[in-house]
Length: 144
Ligand SMILES: [Zn+2]
Ligand SMILES: [Zn+2]
Image (cartoon, rainbow, N blue to C red):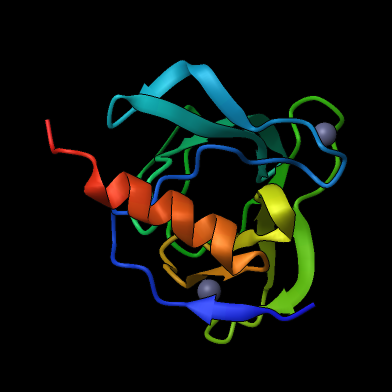
């Protein structure tokens, strides 16, 4: 399948469906960020385990967790339901640590670096038509 790396303007594309490698939804209707359901995963750092919530808007690097995270920590993210690691083989080009992936419908992925303070991330879209259709639909929606 063809894979395309897309530069998406910050804050325009909202992740509305996100899954662990085993297909469990990571979208959390009980936790809103920017008034939309957050992406929630398990997080492990310095031997402590909790949950972390990410802003669902792509490129908005906002998260909430009750774990203390220090710049330079490398967190480990996993599915809160099945415990599957979200880590993938790809290394961050800046930090050389393995990145993590959140699966989108149709085979797309958002990948990001788990090193606290690094903002390296990208979006991979496989079914470009479907994803772009959703993207433009969102663009056309009047701003509240
Ligand atoms: Zn899972
Ligand atoms: Zn990095």
